[in-house]
Length: 103
Image 1 (tube, rainbow, N blue to C red):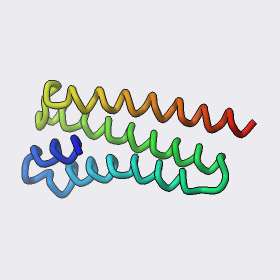
Image 2 (cartoon, rainbow, N blue to C red):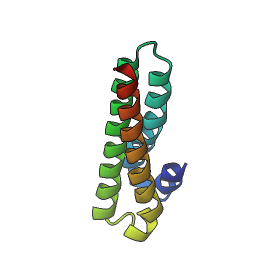
Image 3 (cartoon, helix red, strand yellow):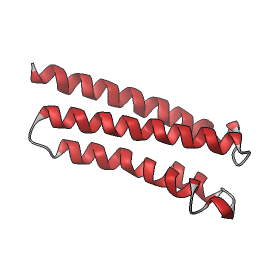
Image 4 (tube, rainbow, N blue to C red):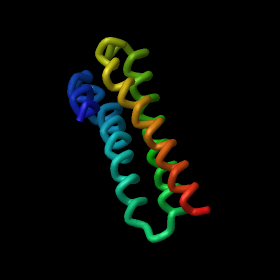
């Protein structure tokens, strides 16, 4: 939801480009976690967690682009960047736990 709020703050000319990509990347994180958890095989779950982590890194890159373009400041992004770091660590630990349970 934080990403959606930030996307609304981008200039009008970016609403259908960068803002849309930011929203899609953010929603992809949650969607891939959900899809992976619904799979029957733990290996599939780990793969979808990896895809979710990739989407998270994509979102981080979009934030960096918005900062470099002057659309958002570091202060604007501080909460989002903390969330990205936190969620990334959670995904890594979850993938490790699911992998360990497979053994």
